[in-house]
Length: 362
Image (tube, rainbow, N blue to C red):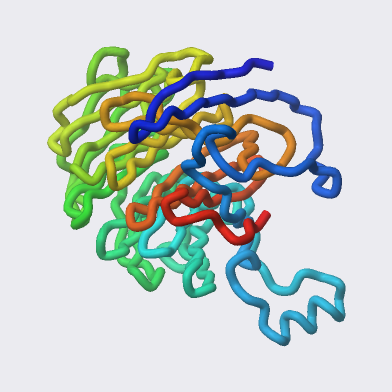
């Protein structure tokens, strides 16, 4: 067991940070025997910055059951009609809608939390998905999905219907992540590459799918990558890339010019062990999920560590993660959405500025 601890400030308030990394491959979650769960971060006596709000693991967590569904559930002893998350990876949020790529169910789940609606995207026709990983949304709510097996980007409209695709078979080795600028005029695909490949880079297309350029190649210098995984674009237009094998985050202009990088391998706060995904909020705070730590670390625009949420655990509780992957932040209200593949869930964290939730949904 290793305890990580560091004190930083956020908005002039001291924030004491602590997290425990617990690794246990043999434990099985027993929901009936769980202790009280942590509901606020950072730990007391520090002032809360985020509250656990809810967990989403199926359409039943969003959609109210109809009378027919309730009767069927009563008659059969089942749970009614529901679509469960099987193996989530990427997540993105736009206008109260949460999109989750599911590589086993071979679709993207759309959870309209505000309106209590659910939609499965990419299940039929030319837009049928095989292995959806990274996802992104532009300001028109067009959805961009990395289909890793077919080596393409599939684009869907606001209604979830297929629009077009970018065929990347001649460009991609192992596409995993994607970022799109606001008007959809630039598509940035993260190509993770492989052991014998030098094509560890970001491939750039215009909005019509025409190839423009590569950003980076394999290496450890500024602007070079080793097993990059995911990307996002900040509100100021900066392109951020998770450079997984170099244990850092790199930042670029959208024209591909290197700006800066931060991070290093280690077990201390502010370092990375298995960085997986990245998001940036409206204030340019940077959120990085780490599969080894089982948390998301939050840095300000000066690259100071502010705090983190979560810890690694084999017990399925709020804020407990075994294999966290995608991370998203709603730039309208500041809510944070964190994916865990092992527990097949997305957890939602509410910023303290919105007030403490009346009840949290486990």
